[in-house]
Image (tube, rainbow, N blue to C red; front, side):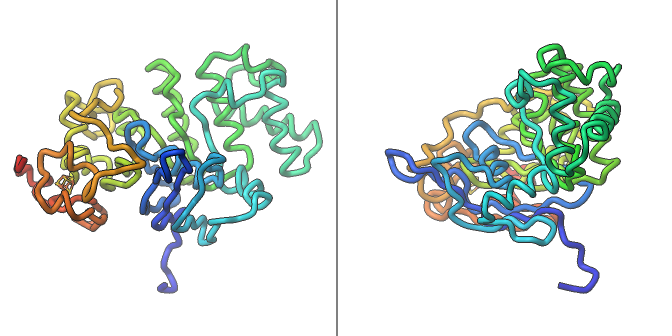
Length: 345
Ligand code: SF4
């Protein structure tokens, strides 16, 4: 490493996660690599079952009971955290890396006031007293835009709207000044107006604190609004990575191309072509994702791919750089980017 090389906030190298199932091992995440820098938002998009949420769980040392990390490394601020004991993970979570969940109602304790739950972060992790913890909790509630924060401190979660509850979750996630934020579908349960407010708030806080953020989403509109770069996942692997503008304008993988073609283009608020005005979920492409316990030989997208040729059915494509800062796991990425449609089936 050169003396002035910048260490990325997060580096994931060749991550693999498997589940034990009665049908045999299910390879939920295979050979996933990416990095996130300070002040940057990387979105991970994909259909359900593509491996995006399992990847996020692995980054937090929280893979489900029947799953295990079977390969690769997770490096946070230059420290390899793969296989850390649970006690060390508990320290890292909140302090260095924090999570915002899709459903704040189930993440918050319904029997405790929101003020208590935010203040608890300071009491437990920082050993602060009751009055100081409450003061900091109020400050955080103001920062995330909860009106009349001092009074609302003593309300229980059910007295807050969905958008306000998500603001409480963001306050809790930011409480200990983490460097990396993972937001798993943070706006899926919210209506479009509240969704836009929450995305704006996340972006503001992230920029103010220079946080790195991973945004897990199945919604290409949300990604266009909130992310700098995007990693598209398919069948447990990363199909391609690039800036949002590049990937949306000139996909380097037929799966991404299919997603972009399936939704109408609209002008967009961040100078990025949005696939759907106001956001929208991924739209189905012909065929089905493969059975992860028995993926097809070669490229796992080949049964659905209009570009597939003999090589695709035999050789699994490795991710490779196809343009500066862009990788694609497709043998024929250059043709896809050039818009050459070769229906070889
Ligand atoms: Fe399609 Fe072949 Fe590329 Fe796979 S490697 S995405 S089957 S063209």
